[in-house]
Image (cartoon, rainbow, N blue to C red; front, side, top):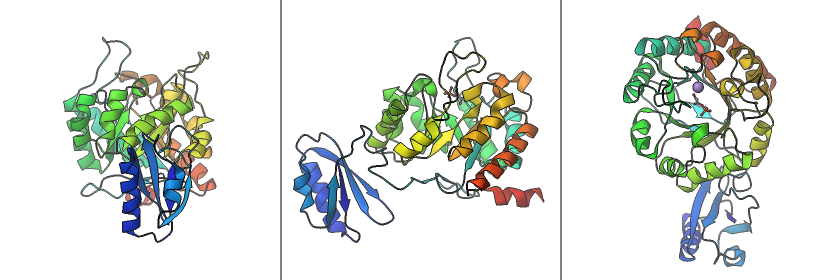
Length: 354
Ligand code: PEP
Ligand code: MN
């Protein structure tokens, strides 16, 4: 259920509604919109009756939310959520989910300091504002490269200082959430962990933006239910990511579910990011699917880039060389313009290139 307050409702009126929800044993989540405050009521709602609230001072209307993902649903929050990354000294402000598209790029794994810095330089020049790189890697085989761990986080933080890029990196376990949140600007929850509820709880407890990837065998609704865990835990800065699902097709690593992008935009107010690298597994079609994702309404892309893909310790087959990534950004910019959008931070990049 949501309680929509009148425009100009006072803090005391809002406070009284929140107190009443708590008295009745449910959990209120206050959403401050541009015009109105909305209080979403979740948790134990057995004793909640809409009539209790409809006559309270300052209440405009009470509505039930039909979707099981209450806080993630557009019904509870009709305006798009714009996620502002935590400011970092010397870095420009970055907003995700607003008019402009955000580009995140970098290697699948942080392999060494020189590999990461070389890639960071290239993706920055091409127009990315966020650097990706796995320090803790979820590998199918225990014998494959598992990532550099804390050392990888330190290298990412160094790249942030040198190149002025925010960083996104994956967190694999609940215990590691505090330390990864110390280094990362965005916590990535991987496809294999989309329903790791302990991890979702832990990410819900920190105040750091999170990118939640769709499980390779999960439905769109399951993805939104997992986002709901993080939101219900108190972390409101969640973005969801389509990264391909497993089908019978063998010529691509996964099948990019392009449908998911407009469907997610309809169902949720959270920013929607596309990962054309894991969605395809093939560098040769990553630019095509990047353009398609932006045309379908994605708020951003996360793309794997490696200076020498043939030497990559993970996901070389889907990693773009820097010059191809540069071309990808140029193409995506034109698609974004056709959608009346721009690319976050792009003017700064154009100026730097002059
Ligand atoms: C990754 O981003 O490198 C990754 C492991 O992605 P996913 O969880 O989508 O497989
Ligand atoms: Mn990867």
